[in-house]
Amino acid sequence: MSRYDEDAKYDRPKRRTRPRTKDRPTYDAAPIGFVVTRDRGRYTCVLNDGQVVTAMKARQLGRKGVIVGDRVRLDGDASGDKDTLARIVEVEPRKTILRRSADDDDPVERPLVANAEQLVIVAAVANPEPRPRLIDRCLVAAFDAGMRPLICLTKVDLADPEELLSTYRPLGVEAVATRRDGDLSELIEQLRDRTSVLVGHSGVGKSTLVNALVPEAHRAVGVVNDVTGRGRHTSTSTLVLQLPFGGWIVDTPGIRSFGLAHVDPQELIKAFGDLADETQDCPRGCTHADNEAACALDTAVAEGRVDAERVASYRRLLASRETRD
Picture 1 (cartoon, rainbow, N blue to C red):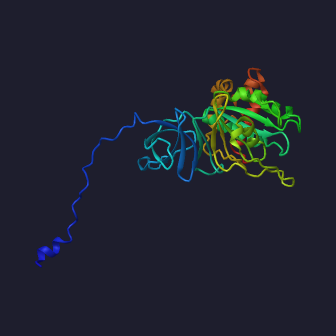
Picture 2: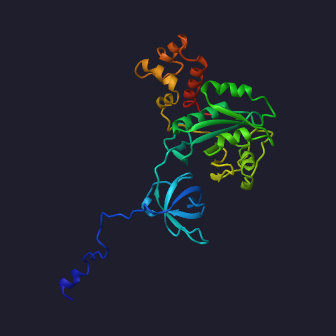
Picture 3: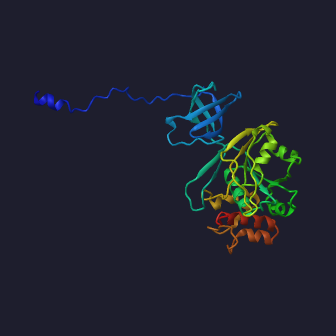
């Protein structure tokens, strides 16, 4: 073998792939699915005609996440037949996104649900005892996401809900009260034709509500520990269910904390239009908190332009951003 032949065998092999092109496939005609649940990398999607399709995320999406509530375009076999699998190739722009972090100093945001219109904060008035600071945190998350908040109090047959309701009345947040095996017509009217996310800590009765609203859901129902006063997690995954009277509900696992590291406290004031107008006269850098000496909100209260209870409620929400439950 000549020296030339010996060197030639170490030459870099020629590429035999097709030349690159800037043209990318379009999926404008691809069917759109609504992601209702996720399980180990498989997504269950409901098409506009009601067909249920199982899909996986296409490689071209890279690190772009797909979450429950997303509207996605599907490629491949979207027939929904047994043992078929479609590909999620595009995620439609999200109208809202509910997020939380593991803790207030955790910079990693965890998106929970996309495209929901309403956040239903479920809290029991007793057994387990209500946790107002957790309710506050959920309200902050709702305002940050641009969602309509609704407080749903359960187990009102065990205690008077008025004390808890009076706490949030100044914020203008609507609330409904329910009891076990009671009339749910008021709650149904609030849910009708909306996509609503149910959040609350374990044991407050979320799964009981879901089973009453969607009897075929068969969500597991837990009990409250008599010693700790806490519930046991029964829902372990986020699931979207269609309501028989119109709309969707998203049942989430019970939460113990709701981190708000992703929320800018300065943005929270935008959820309170009447108070935001008054803060235009605040000095630069004012946080509008209780310890601000020259906050214009205090002047507005003193001159009777805004309600003192409403300012106090807003400041409690603001403080909840900095106080972990």
